[in-house]
Length: 111
Image (tube, rainbow, N blue to C red; front, side, top):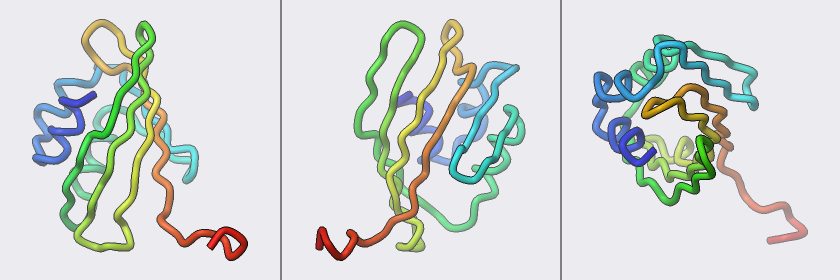
């Protein structure tokens, strides 16, 4: 997972693609989007602006990895954390379910 996040950080789309299984599937539940390998690479490659990605942690249990990363975007309103659940098949990522929460302020009762 660290290699994936570092490849995203470097905009190294060849490495990103090489880490994904040919039958890779991704899901972003918050926006109800689903991607195959080409679509997933394309949506990230063409995302506007620039970013710095800092992998924070990854926890593995067998072929399942949960990962957290911090994404600092050139548009501060797009700076966020991402949490993903990944299924590995051999050395490749076969499936991803990623949550990209919109940044926001605490609710008034917690401020």
